[in-house]
Structure formats: structure tokens, C-alpha cells
Amino acid sequence: MSYRKNHYIPEFYLKNFTNDDNHFYVFDKLKRYKNCSFDYKSPGQICFEMGRNILFNETKDSNDTLERVTYNYFDGLHHETIKQLVESDINEFRWTEKN
Image (cartoon, rainbow, N blue to C red; front, side, top):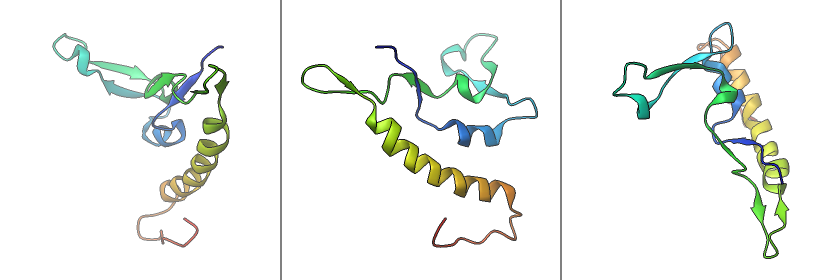
């Protein structure tokens, strides 16, 4: 089975902190004692683990339902709320039952 990147902080959320070329500086705590502790990366390059959301049953068969169904559903809901927050003026945004 080939594993794919599973982000524990969704890319749609991270993209709200990027500059015009869709990158930001990331502090690498493992390099902190070296001269170069900041890296310039895109949201797709950070906050992930390969195959993090793959579940295995007793016979070692894999199942990606957790990611495909559950996480996609909730990420879709949160994406809309985050988008509304980002696109609205701080004085205009109003919480509703939907968001």
C-alpha cells in the first residue's frame, strides 16, 4: 500500500497564514542551535505524517474511511467557517448557528 500525506493541521487552515507566493517561514526546533532554524515552506510541506489516518483491521487490511468520509466531512464544515472569518471584516462577522 502506498501512503499519502495526512495533515494534522489542515492545509486549508495553514493557507490563511501564507504570503503572496503561498509560503511562510517555519521555525524548526530541531535546528534551533544551528545557524538556520527557519525554513521557507508551503502548507503542503508541513504538519503531516505519511499514512497517519490509515486504519488496519485484524487481517492487516487497510481502510481509509476515517479520512475519506469523516475527516473530509468535518474539514468541509470548518473550511467554510474559516473562509467566512478570513473574508469578513472583524466588525462585520457574526456567528450564526450554521458556522
